[in-house]
Image (cartoon, rainbow, N blue to C red; front, side, top):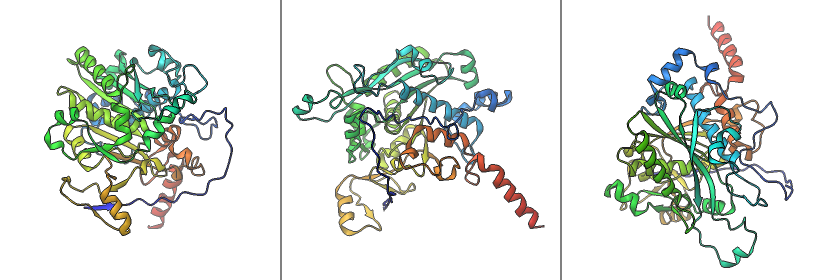
Length: 429
C-alpha cells in the first residue's frame, strides 16, 4: 500500500500582539463588505420548478448518488442547501459564550428555543429541540484545578439538534429534515484533545453493533474522546445524540425523514463520528448525510470502508489553502483497498527513519466521502488573506457562495473567463 506524505510550507507570519481581553471567535465574520458573503435566498436562486425539483430529488441532493453531476459545476440548489447548513453551524458559534470571564463561559448564551432566532441567521423553519455538550477525557494533574476555571473546563456546549417544523419548508425539502450542528474548537481542553493525533480503535459498543468485520477501523484519539467521554454531571455527547435520535425516530419515524449533520473544524470531525454512530446504532435510521466545513481527517482506511458500508454520505467542503484539512497524520490513496491487521504499510518516498515511525505509530489516515474543493487563492477578495483566515467558517461560506466550477472557480471572475474563451473561439475561425 502506498502512503503519501503531505509536505506543507508555512509562510512567514508577521508578529503581532493580541490584547489579553480579546476573545478570538473562530467564526469571525468579516465586517468589510468587500469580503462579506450574502446567503442565496430560496426565492432568488430557485424558480418554482426548481423548488419542486428539490422535493422530488431530495435524496440526490442528500448524496444518495454521491452528488454525481452536482459538484462541478456546482448545482445552484445544492449551493443553497450547503449555505443553509453553514448557517446552522454559524448559529452554534454565535450561541457559544467565548468569554472566559463570564459566569456562563462555555455554555450557550441562548435558551434552546431561541438559538436560531437570537443568532440572527434568519428564518429557517427549524426548531431546536436539544442542547449538546462534549466532555474532555484527558486526565489532568490536580494543580490545574487551582488555576483559572476556564483552563480546566471539561464539559462545554458544542451544538444542538433542530427539527424542521415549518410545513412550507417540509414541502420544499420533500421530507422532514433533522439537523445536528457542531461548532469548532473553543476551549483549552478541546485544543489538547485535537493534539492527540494517534489513531485508536472504536469502542466495543460500536464495534459490536457494526460486526466483527469492523476489525481494524480506527479514529483519532482526541475526537473519539470528546465524543464518548462523560462525567458524573454530564453524559457523553454520544449518549445525548443517541437518546435524541431515538426520540426523533419514535416521533417522526413514519414519515419521510433525513438526518443532516453539519460542523466546522472540530465540529466536522464530530459530525462524522455522530453519523457513523447513528447508522451503526439504529437499524431503522433514515438517510444520514454529513455536510462538513474545513474538517480534519478522522480515521483510517478501514473506518472509511465502514462508513461506506453503513450508507453514510459525507460531503466535505475543503479549502485547499486550509492547513487544518491536511492534518492529522499521513494519507493513503483513495483507491487503496481495505487493510487487515497483518498487512504491512508500504510507505513510499519517505526517509527511512520517518518510514519506521509511521509503521510503528498509528498515524495513517484516509479521507472520507466526496470532496468539494475550493481555494481562497482563486477568490479575488480572499487571495491576499492570511493562513488563519483560510480556515474561518466565513471564508468557507464566501467560497461556496461564489464557486462556479473547476474551470471557472469564482463567479466574480466568470465574465472575464467567458470573455477570454469567447475571444479564443473567435480567433480559431
